[in-house]
Length: 441
Image 1 (cartoon, rainbow, N blue to C red):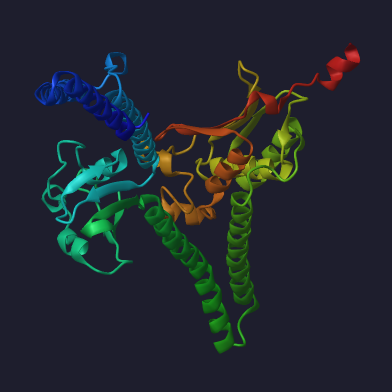
Image 2 (image 1 turned 180 degrees about the vertical axis):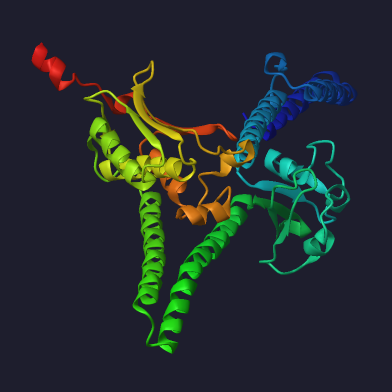
C-alpha cells in the first residue's frame, strides 16, 4: 500500500462518516464530526512523527516502530534506506582499510599533503624516511617538521620529473630521493625512495673501473717503458735484453691473471648454482693443492695435509679448486719464511664438510675482516702487489661459496696467524669407506 493511497483512504473514510452523521444529526453535527476526525488523524501523524524522530536518533532494527497504514510504509522505507547506507558505509570502510594496508605495504614512503603542504597522512615507511610521527604531526606544515634544504621550493616546483636527493639527519648513512606528485585540488603525494643501494652500486662500479684501470696501468706502463727503451736502443747487451723481456713476460702474466680472474668473477656472478654438479674427490684435491703450495713456497714453508682418504663432496670441481686454491695461495703469500700451513678436511657434528687453511702468517686486523671479500680490497696494497695478488681471489671465493650454499669463516690474530674455514651443508658431503678398509671387509 502506497502512502498516497493510504492517506486518501483515511481522508475519504472521515469525510464519508461526517457526511452520514450530517445527514442523520444535521449539518452542525456533520461538520463537527469532520473536524474531530481530521484532528484525530493529525494527532496520529504527530505521534508517529515523534516516534520516528526518536528512533532516528539511534536506529535499531530490534526497536523499529510498527505503526499502521502510511507510517508503516514510511518506517519500512527509512529502515531499508538506512540498511543500504550502512552496508555501503561498511564497504567504503573496508575498501579504505584495504587501501591503507596496501599503502603501508609499499616499500616506498608516501605522505599525503593538502594544498597548503600540511601533512594529512603518511605510511610507516615515509615516517621512517622523513622522521615523522603519524598522528602527532598530522595537520602540520611538512616544511616545518622535515628539515630538508630546498624542500619548500621543490614542493612549489611545476617540473613533473624533478626529484630531490638528501640524507636524513637521523640516518646520515641513508640516501633518499623525493618526488612530489600533484593530484586533486592542489594536494600532493610526497613519495620517498631509498636509493642507498643504488648509490652503493654506482660507487662500487666506479671503484671497480678505477681499480681495474689502475691494476692494468701498472704492468702496461712497465711493458711500454721497456719497449720504448728497446726501440730507442736497438742494440743492447743480450743479458739486459733477456732481463727486460723477462720483466715484460712477468707483467703480461700479471695482466692475464687479472683478466682471467675478472672473467671468472663475471661468470660466477651471472649464475646461481654450479654449471655441473659432480663428485669431487676432496682427498685428491687437497693433495694437488699441497703440491701447488710447495711449488709456490719454493721450500720456504712447512705444508701439512690432514684429510681422510675417500673424502668427497658434490659440486663444481673447477670452481671448488679455484676457491680452495685461492685460500691456499694467500696463505703461502702472507706467511713468512719458516712458517707452517695446514690444509685440512673434516665433518662437523651435522655431517657438513669443513675445509680449513691454517697458517702462522702475519695475521689480519679485526677491522679488515668484514671487507676481505670485496673486489680489489687489500689490507696492505703494496705487499699484495709484491706477492702477485690481483685483489679478486676472495671475491671469487665468496661467489663460489654462494653457488655451493657454503659459508666462509675467518679467524685471525695479528702476528699469530689466520684460519680460513669453508663450511658446506651436510647434503653436499659424501662419506665413503676407504679402499683399504673396503678390501679388508
